[in-house]
Length: 337
Length: 201
Image (cartoon, rainbow over all chains, first blue to last red; front, side, top):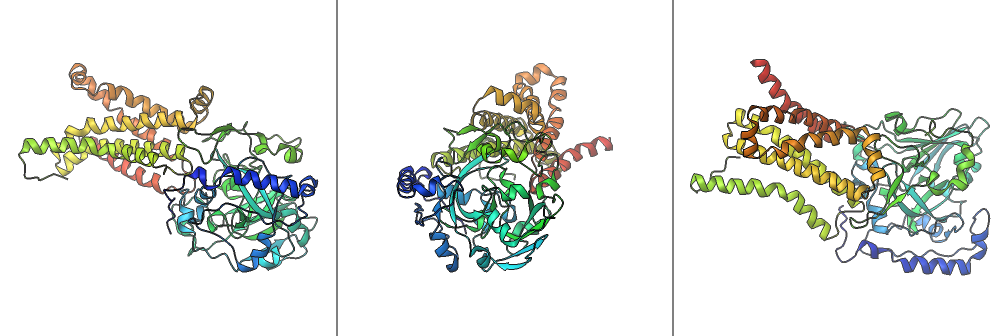
C-alpha cells in the first residue's frame, strides 16, 4: 500500500500549531492538578484531540484498546512544549528494518502487519513468568500522552506525542527477583510479514534485541508505548507495543515487542553486536561523543525543508539530563557510549 | 544501444550527442521537480545529498564502462562520450558536496572541519572528489593537446578515485549491504577487465 501525500496539504498544515496550543491551554486550565503532580500521574480523564487529516491512514487500534486510548491524558510534567511533528511525517519516516532499509519502506510494507491478537512473553528472573495477551498486560494501566523528543543516531530528530504507560509499572507487576539486573527486549520474528528478515543482505541477526539496565528501565521517563497522536501505534511505528527511551538514541526504543526478559548480565543488543565500536549498549544521546559516521553535535529537527534545514544543537541526554544524568554518575560516558 | 535511425550519419551523431548530453541532467531535473512540488520527503536534506551522491557514482561507473563497451561490445562511438560522462560524475559529485554543505551542515565551518577530520568515510569521499577536479579541468581538447602523454597518466587517477568512492559507500553500510554489493561487483568487473588486459600483455 503506497501512501502518497496529498498535494492539497502542505506538511506544515497537517497539525496546525493552533490546535496544539489551544488544547494545551485548555488542559492547563482544566487539569492544573495533573500537571503539578510530582510523579506526573494524570488524575482526570480527558480525551485528547489530535488533528489527523482524514485522507491519511487512521490507526484506531483493536476494539478492546479503544476505551483505554481515549481515556488517556497528557502528562504535562514529562512532556516537552515543543511542537510535535505533523502526523504525516511521523507515520511515513521510520527506521524499522524488519520492513526494509529505506525510511519509506515501513509505511509501504507494514500496512497488513497483524498486531492483534498479540502475545508477550515475560521471562527470566521474575516471579510471574509466562505468555500474556497484550490485552491483559495493558488492562491495569492508565495510558498517558507524553510528548518526547526522539533523537535518531543518524543525527535527525522528531517530536512525537506517544501514548503509553511507564515501563516501571509493568515491571513491578511481574515482580523481578533480586537477580534481575537488566531487562532484555525482543522484536517479533516473522519472515512472512517482515520481508527484510528474509533478506540475505541484512546485517542484522534477527530477532532485533535491545536492553536496559534495571534503573534505566525503572526511570519514570521510560515508556511502554501503544499509541501516537491519540490513537494506536501504526504498524510502521512499532505496533502494538514498543519501548520509548527518550534520552537514548532511537535504536534503543525497540518496536513490536514479543519478549521481555529479566537477566543478570548485560544483554547483547543488535546494533552493538553488528558494530560494537559504533553503537554502545548505553547509547545515551551525547553531543560530545561522535559516531564514526555522524557528528552528534547537531541534529536536523524533522520535518525540515531545503530552505530551512532546521539544524539544532544536540543536548546531553537529549535534553533529559535533569531526569536521568544521576544514573550515570561516575561513569565515563566517552567509554560507555 | 547503437541508434539506428533513418537519418544521415551526421544527423544521427548529432542526435546521439544531444540525447546523451541531456539525459544525464534528468536526475537533477527530477529532484528540482520534487522540490518544487514539496515531495522530497520528511528529511529532504538527506534525500538530496544521497541522490546526488548516487548519481555521481553512477556516472563514474558509466565512465569506467566506456572502454570495455568499446573494446568488447564494439561500441566505437562511445569513446566520444567518455569525457562527457566523466564530467557528469564530477558535476554530481560537486552537487553532492554543495548539498552536504548547504543542507546537512548549513555552511557551519566548525561542523565542516569536524566532519572532514573525524569521519573516515567523508575523508575518502573528499579525496575522491579532489582527484576528479583536476581531471575535469583538463578535460578540454586544448588541455589534452597541451598535456600530451601526461594527460593519459593524469586521467588514470580515475582508478584510485573509484576505489575511494567505493570505500566511501561501503563505510555507510548499516542494516543492508545490498547496494554496496551490486556497485562493488560492477566495479570489480570494470577494474578487473583492465587488470586482465594488463596480464594478457
